[in-house]
Length: 148
Image 1: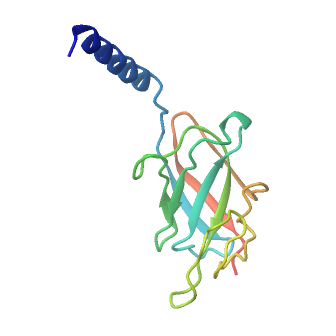
Image 2 (image 1 turned 90 degrees about the vertical axis):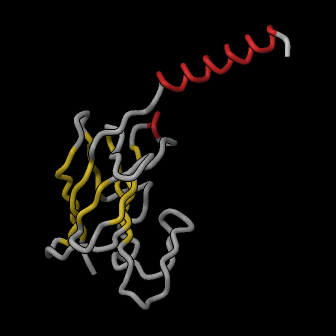
């Protein structure tokens, strides 16, 4: 190999490494609970945060699945890493009891299968729930839905 080629490889590699390290998107902790207005925990609910700012519409969407108590921790790039600070519209799909037909999320807002919320909270273009994640994160997000 020529020394010019090796210098080129080193320069390109350094440029890629430097470009990636300076522009990483930072997430902050984000977790909370989801319950019905009657106080029932929405166990196994799928929660998706859709960026609301026009310049962030194509950004990755933080997601979570609630545990049996309705507690959830958002993840964007890695398990439990939280969300990028900003405004979000929130969609929720709450699957039915075990033994029912499997839930399919093949099209946002047009899911098939048993959603205990009957699609009411599944439209990302007109979300009924809105949340702001501040720059320091939020560990007390409280989502309430009108249950079935």
